[in-house]
Length: 246
Image 1 (cartoon, rainbow, N blue to C red):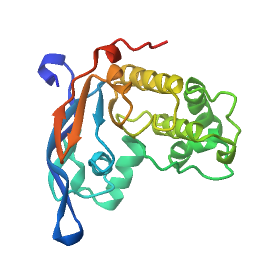
Image 2 (cartoon, rainbow, N blue to C red):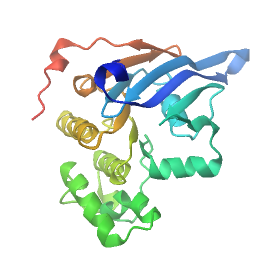
Image 3 (cartoon, helix red, strand yellow):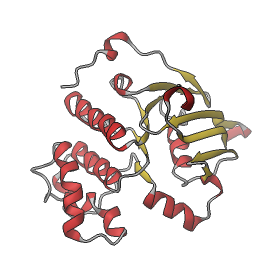
């Protein structure tokens, strides 16, 4: 990954020697993270690959201040979020972070536009202004005609796109996304990845995607594989580098 000196951009996220182990049956230890270090600059999108159980979700959950590591540090704007109190961690997630988890946790019976605006409501932003902010995001995600549909009227992929709009609604400096295209077909995957790339550039956001989607490499500035708790550079496939963005 390019250094801040080379790119002229500051590191927004820096992970230092992060370790998280879990006990397993028979006295064995699962080394989900075993000394992971990486950094992401403002305006940069990084793709993180790995099979189920490889530690991707553990890493994202720690960066979201929802789980404590065994050791190591996670610096966001030079502040170690692993040391935050529960109250400060909640504030960090509310103000500084956009997080798209694998669980499609939309409020049942609530229209898509209001589900997308939940974080704005939490910040005491009025309904009209909140709707004004999230509507363009939902439209760019192909949900312009589904704004008033409730979650039970939406497909799994549509629900996922509502969550992506929610994560981006507050203009966060850091976005984490756990399988953001996991429920989408190839066309919608391209649209979502293109939007995320544009958000990185337009809003100078640092973004980390945990993904199985091979298309993500074509949009990412850097791609890594997480295996046996450690990171390795991932070679991009030539056909993916020329992916159609239309």
